[in-house]
Length: 178
Image 1 (tube, helix red, strand yellow):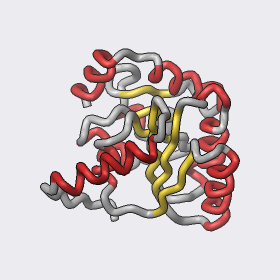
Image 2: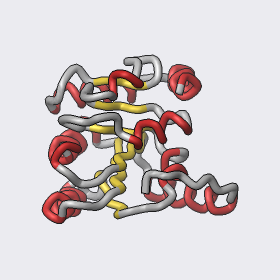
Image 3: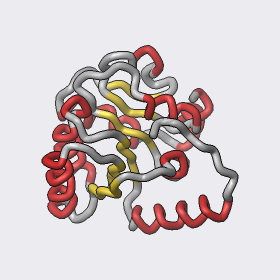
Image 4: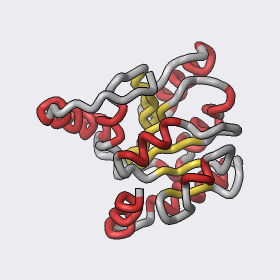
């Protein structure tokens, strides 16, 4: 599941990009979480952050599978936020999604070095993450992504909002750095 098959299928990507634009549905920013639903991924914090009213113009797409209790919580939170949080299930074309969103977001409470971060770096996707495990070894804060100061809702919201305020020139520089 972690291996990436690169396909050169422009029509497929264009269709997906249009589909994501539809998912975006008028939201200013679109973020992506990719991962298995396990306790280390700290999905309850992710949901709490993206349920915050300060992110009304922001949508979170969630791709993954695993723990059924967490999955049920994700689906329930999606309806409570009027689909600002949207569960897409398990997908095989992760890179296509990464090429069509604004940033990857991780709120893990503990990690090694998540492969999803390496995948995001490979396509130049900005990363917003908690500073755990090996993540600070590859994310240089404000150079190729953003690291929160800790694991609180406020600390994660602070770095998301800092990213949301960047102009396109600064975002392009982060993408290039990746």
